[in-house]
Length: 528
Image (tube, helix red, strand yellow):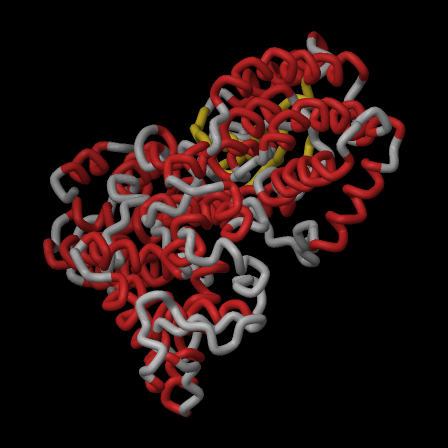
């Protein structure tokens, strides 16, 4: 890094230096190592090493980190090191004083009326740029936000040809009725950029822990143009003015989603759907996808969104029963007809989205297999473990309640309901103590217990047993909900090391007992 920073000494314009420094900082952006804060280890390590070098190249690199460092701590440490080197007489490049002095000029959003992606365009200038005295922009940052992948940053780049860029965007709206190019307030642009950066970082962290849905492709984002410009995107977002009254993201609580589903099911568009129960389940998945993945926009429809939902997200995240698989394309078609006009789409765009749906149906029918089949589960076991249809929860719920995946409880499914405290306690008692304590069949013994053994053959209510059951119930409930997300990741790492299931449970219980709050719990789990 320090050798590469020598090139900074030959540069004259601060933008050129910022691009090089952003690329250097992107070398480890998005990398995750269990138990190691990579950003702090390498970022702060680089600051310390550059400061100790006492060279002009080290000072140039530190000046860049003081402006572009991803964390405030890194920027403060780098700034202090710059001051120390300057006091020692180390030469500083001429552009160093201009870093961080960039001024925003204007902001725009470019895209299409389908809304699959937004290109957030922000223009800036340095005081030394030609035309700066008249307020002209010297360069533009373009950040692509992909809403079909959860609102992440998909790409970013910089250009100094600002006039040509804006002329191109305006020309698209004249020739394409679906194109959109609108000016926005700089405060709004800052919110869009910071939200996209935050979601990208969250998904990168989830991908490293095996928790991110593969359909986002986020695992590949740690390389390429986005990594190169990620630090610059953060710095330019900080250069934009803060909104005085920041708008809160739309809140889609369960009751609000249910009202939206009810309105659709009561509409003329849904009148021809014959299986009302299957239609209700299908529209719940459509709305959840729009609220959770598509930036809280369930009414937005587009060809790309339909394909991403039907062919990628749905098969990987949701278990559909046979009747729901048959109903889903018809429900989705009715939803497009109903939601498209409400989302502002013209009729021609609604028809284009329907065409994409019909073209995808054949692939959906052939590619969608029962995802639970690979686990060797019967449909009844799937119903027990996935009452919400969340396929991503299946492995951790099988780990928490393995008896639900077997045949032992086939006659007592109602008694062993893992969504209720009584059912969870009965499942855990049987799992840990071999006591078949179904509420409707008190006193029944498991097949491998001796009925004459009173200590093992009856439901034990001693304080010690109750305390053990309560602790395991708290852990099982967290595993069922995936709270916190890295709980299951920690369990998987322990299993991969060869620990038995019971040993893993005991380790996780110890971590839960020793953690005072959620932040401390998450950190301890990462260290397991």
